Every structure is written in structure tokens, then in C-alpha cells.
Image (spheres, rainbow, N blue to C red):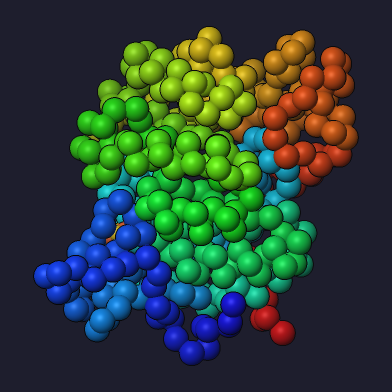
Length: 365
Ligand code: SF4
């Protein structure tokens, strides 16, 4: 890895090939954009320049914040610890309900005001006592080369790496990208191709392939988020089908977060998700054998806490991002009955709490 930001924001891209008709096809994600010289892909940050694909936003960020790791959301990965979070610009999906559209739909590069080399990011996270760095706000798949360089710098300083992603990534790029990640929260946005096609211009099957890959071919800790949107993906049959698939294909230990939608971007006329819908989704998941299912984006300790699947005692009390009870031993087992809780735990929980703290990056030397 080299510190290239002093040279240019544009670096050679990986995962593309020439087509017989003279165009170049990007293979980073299943959108497979086919480009003539000078054109950008749908994600906007990858482009064809001359005879190659490039990433145009290496070393540029749309801002940094220290968040509770529960905000990613991750409930079983270093609970209570702070995580340095950042994103860039652009996205490879077109979700009409995007809750981060100012970043994901950004078309002006002045949104990317912060110079952010991998070394600066790792050093800043370390200095603030963060357990990890999160690639979030927009999908890190589209800035793969930059994300990988940041991840390498983080691991060299003993920091973990977390990807927050829709999992819409090509098979070759997927292997490299996730090799550098310790944990991932993957959006499972719905469980019908209609939903993915009409609301995100994507396909469900490609996401399911990524989930199976992560679970069975990597050691990446994975949790799933389903943003529940009234009238779009909130039917009992869809919750049943989704959670049965997750149980059968990924196993019962993958935590599932059913999160509340708020009106945003192109879905301003859709109402907020009623909390009871989230509780219903969680119940269906648990009835289908999932051990850890949560409601999200609401205050509800009963349905946001972690319970032992052996004896039913509370293991981690949680209300939104605030932890309370802690009933795990130093090895991540229930103190009441000894049953192991799936996840990555320290002997004690972190004490960061629910606060968000914007930060400025430190110089790398
Ligand atoms: S990563 Fe960007 S350029 Fe490449 S296929 Fe996906 S949307 Fe197109």
C-alpha cells in the first residue's frame, strides 16, 4: 500500500475487462456498467479514463464521526465500543427510500472536502480509543481500492474493520473486499425481486449470494438489517420467507435487525413504520428459529436486548444505543447457564454510550 493522496485522487480501478465492441465493463458490482471513454458508472465514482477504469475518490471523505458500534448496527461485535465511521460519495443502488441520500446521491466532488489518507484515518481512530473503523454512510463496495487500503492501515494499528453494505458486489471483487473486513452489517432490504427491482434497481439473488459467501466462506462476523417500509416489505409472508431462508441458509446465529423507516428521499409520502410492525417481524424471526432478532431505530428495551437462547436470561440489556445489563462471562457465555452467545465479545462491555462525536482527522506524521 502507498500513500497516494498526495499524488492524485484518481487511482487505477480493479475488476473490469474489455468488451468486443470497444467498451469497458466494470465487474465490481452486478450492475456491470459498460462504458465508453469519459463515461462514469452509475455509482458516479468509478469511471473510464482512456483505456482503463479508475476510482476517482481515493483519499477523499464526506466526513468523520465517532459512533456507538450499535449504530451500524452491530449488537454482537464489541458491544459498547466507539467506532470511527466515514463514507465517501455515490452509491451503486438507487434506493428510493435512501436515508443517506445527500451522500449517496452526491454528484459534486466538493462534498468530499476531507483529505483522508489511510494512515490519517487509522491514527485518528487509535488516538480516540476506537475499537474499529466503519465504512458506512454510502456503500464501500464502490470505493473498494480505497476501503482496502484503509483496512490494511487499520489492521496494522490493531483496529478492526467493519463494512456497512448492501452486499451488491461481484464475485471476484467480493473475495478481495471481505478479506480485509472483520465484521459486516449487510442490508437485506426485502425478500422479493419486485422490491429490489422497483425500489433499488437491483436483484435479490445477487445479495443472497453475498450472504451465503460471507457465512460459509469467510470468518467475517455478519449481522443483517431489514429496513421495514409500510406497504412495501412489511407483510407476514415476506417476513416468514426471509427469516426461514436466513435460518436454513445462514443458520440461527446471524443477528437480524428490523429497523424503522422514516420518510426520506423519494418516499416522503410513505408513513413511518409502526413499532408494533417491528415487534411482529421480530416474533416471526424468533418463531422460525432465529436466536437473536431485534427492533431498531426505536426505544424498546424488551425487543432490543439480547437474551440467552439456552435459559432465556437477559445477556445484554440495550435500549437503542444505550447498554445496561451485562450477563456474559469473559468468554462470551451466559453467566446463568453457560450457553455460548454468538459474536465477538471483550471481557467487559465498552462504555461509549449513545453519543455521536464529529472528529477532524489527525495528520499522518
Ligand atoms: S461499481 Fe459502479 S461502475 Fe462498477 S458496475 Fe457497479 S455501479 Fe457500475
